[in-house]
Every structure is written in structure tokens, then in C-alpha cells.
Length: 638
Image (cartoon, rainbow, N blue to C red; front, side):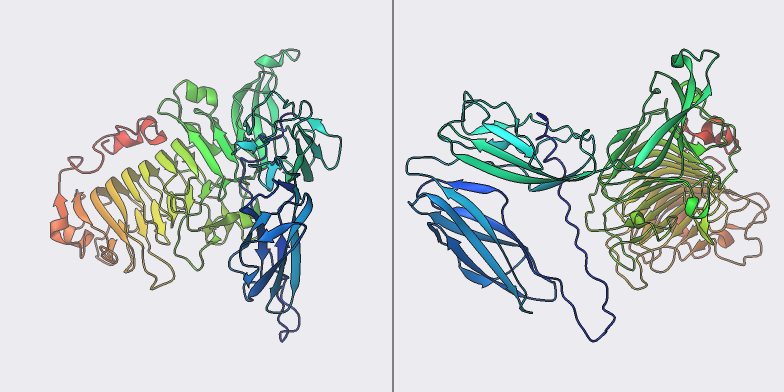
């Protein structure tokens, strides 16, 4: 038990408010009951102490008003207003202690405009004259953890005791009224005492709610108590290993080759292990369904990892979903990228370590699993401040994204390749290779690749996150897709042979909503291929600018009859800067006037094939990708 305190303060306390459902009688209006919560435990006051405070938490229905009244017992005098109107969620009462030792209380009564009344009290002991109070400061009122989790003190926890600390059992705690556990603080410690290295292991606590009562005793017997409410949640994910090859030595597991399969919701910090429980070699990891990172947890994926999604569609579609408030640390390297692929791909971690990043599946194979979805708390422009992400059934509330924290941090995604995904969850609803919903600017996304995804390559839904060094190859729909007032940037990118548009650019929702700022694409290359739709598809409300981009590689038959505009609504709403485009016409194909209808001539420069001076000129910085290692970039002149 000596390790309890470091668990207590590192997690923020989350308050959930719920309201009752509608009454069957539409003519009856119901309101939430008023609630008042005073400080926990019994505080101590020095004889004649002035300027003491007691903070009460108050909850009043948002449609009502409320007033408060303060009364007392014992020798205390209120110096702040004894009556008033409730404003916000806290009422703080300031008071002085008298010279009569003993019990005292501050009582707060709140009455709402419907006549509902609630009250609570803050209890104190006034010490004898010359006897100094002992107090406990710095422990949060409540916290939520996952069983086995260790947290650190945000404190320090301060234990003022001007008369000195008791010689033994100066600080003890009790869990749910059980036996007192001595935390080992002795009378030789100075006062005020600060504790920063005390922790509570919770592996022996099952899920549930626990009352942790701290008691401090000073040298002349005065005591202070503090009641902490600890909510312990069960672990809701599991990782199971399965042997692929025991190498003929069943008695020695250390040379076995295994895969590790992860299922469920990762609700506590978790790092994928680099070897099995008995030293086995891990060939790859398996996502056994919709694996979610929740509860503010962080999933860490080691460099060089290979993660394979099991086949599935509809509500069973496999995906890695990082929910709001949680994070993904996937920090690969050019020598050890992290690769997400399908279960039928033969690629292993050992291949990657050996420098082979390609795998056994063709680059146009798609729809075998879902994809990577990261959700944040940044601003979006949609039907609400938070909405459900596409690719996750509406029955799963962990699919919500959006908020007001534009610097929200969802982790690090660096040198990550996502392949062969985009499985269907419903008609016209597939999972993108990488989906970014309301992701904040505190998130770092660099060096990413999407190959053979059945839907879009990368799609942004609002948010502020930037993406640098991106490659999308063989997207089944659009390569780069933006929605809901994303205001970040994408720079140094390559798009190769999409089946939809190279850029599908949409602005704020709903129609007519204002934009915060334009988003930008700068320094890119688009090799169109034979199946491309639009080169760039803006609409009139799109807040996007495109600069320093090279277009080439469409078929000779593309736009020969001039039946559509390959660059739709050039410039969108005009809020962004677009231009410095270079292009190479296809021999025997349509003229530039048909390819770039309505694009100002000043924005365009024709160059010989691969003689571009904007966008990537070769595969520098992309050598680690499937597209480069397979030779595909070389076939298009990179």
C-alpha cells in the first residue's frame, strides 16, 4: 500500500452529466435536481484563524436559477456574503475561526427557482489556543484509473503541521474503512512536509469505487483527514499470442515464432511488446477487430512493427481507432517503418528489419481490412460541434470527434505505411486509409504512405493538424480529401494513379458556414494515371489553396471530348492562394486549354516530363515507401 499516492493525481477528473429522457406527457417539463457537495473529510483550524475558505460544488439545471444561504455551527464567523445568487458551479465561503475550541461547520443551502432545495456542510475542528492545526493539501477529490495502472502525483502533497509530525503512524490511509496502513512518515520530518514519491499499486483492487481516507496526526495528537474517491476500471482489452513455428523445440519457447493478437479497447497505456511472454520471436501483430485506444490511454507501437488487420466488413470491419483524448505513438524511421497491412500479407517484422518493406500483396489489392482512424478535440464545421466519424457505426459513441481545443495532441505518426484497407461498413461508407477527424495541431504527422485503399487515401475532417511528406498510391477513390473546415497544411507529397480525384476539397458545413482560414497543399506531384477523375475538385465554398504542384501522366484519351472540367471551381472560395502549377501534356492527348479550363494562364507553366521545378523531383525522402521499394516510382520518372 505504500505506493498509493502517486496514483491519485496524475489523471484528470472527468465529470459526466446526464439528463433524464423525455416524459411521456409533452406538457410536463422536468428539471434536474439541484445538488450541493461540500469538502470531504474534517479540516482543522488554528484558534482565532482568519481568512479560511470552504469551496462547495453546486449543480443547477441549466434552465433554472438558484440562490444560496450560509449558516454555521460552532465558533466560526462568515466574512463573505451569507446569501447570494449562484453563478457557475462553485460557491466559496470565507470565514474566521473563533477562540472556542471544538467542532464547527459551514452549511451551504441552495434553492433553485422551482423550489428544489439541497445542502451540504464543511466540517472543521478548532484547536485549543496555542495548538496549531494539521492539514492535508494537494490530493484531488477523485480520480479514475485502470486496475494495475500507476499514476504520479501532480502535487506535491503538502502536510502542514506546525507542531511537528507524530513520532509514528503520522500519516495512514484506509481503503473502504479497512485496516489503517502506515505510509512511513515519522516525527523527524520537517513541517510543512511535502510528499512526491508515494504510490498505491492497484493490481489487487478489482474494478469498482473505493473510498481512500488519509489521516495526518501531528505531535500533540491533532488530526486532519481527507477522503479521496478512487474509481478503478477493469482492463477492457487483451493481447494473446499464438505460435506460428516452434522450430521443433517445444520445451524451449525462446526460439518459437509467434504473432500477438490485440482485441478490445485499450483503456490503459500499452506498448506492443518486442518479444513474447517467454522470449518468443514476434513475427507480426494482429488487429482482431475494431481495436480502440480510449480513456486517455496511449498506445505505443515500436519502430519496425508490422500490424495486420483481420478481414471484416460492416460492423465487424477491422480498424485501429484512436479516440478523443487518447493518443498513438507510432514513431518509425526510414530504416524501420511501421506498416499496417492485411492478414493475408506475408510481410513480417523480420522482413522489415532486413530492409524489405514490400510484402506479398499487389499494390492495387484493397478492401481487405479497415484503416487507421485518429479522432481529436479540435474545431470542426459540421452539423454540430461534435459528430460521428465516417467508417465507424453510429452505435459506437467512441466514433465522435470535434471540440474546441485546436492544439489538441493525438500523438506521433511518423514513417507509417497503411496498405490494402478501406473495407465497407455500409453502402457508400468505406474506411479511409488514414482518417483524421478534428485532430489538433499538437499532433505530429510526417512521412506517411497509403497504398491500395478502397476509399480515400487521407481524409481530413476539420481540425488543425499538418501533414508533411505524404504519398498516396492507388486510392480507390480520392487521394487527398478535405472536409469541415480543416485549416492545416499538407506539404511535400506525391499522388499516384487514384481512381477518384487527386484532390477532393470541400469547405465548412453546412452550406453557407464561414471558414476559420484556408487549408493549403504545397510542394506536390500528381501522376494521374488512366482512371483519374478530377485533377482538383474544389467547390465554391472550399477554403483551400494549392501551390507548387506538378501534374502529368494522364491517358491520351483523358478530356479529349471536353465534356467536364478536370479542375473544378478553381480557387474555391478564393480565401487561399493557388498557382505556380507545372504540367506536362500527354502525347496525342487533349490541349492544356481543355485540361485546365478556367485556370488562369499565369498560374500554369508547361515543362518537359519530369523536368519540374516544383514538387518532388525524385524519390528523395520517400525511399522507405512501398511505392519506391517496389520500383513503381521509378516507372513514373522518380
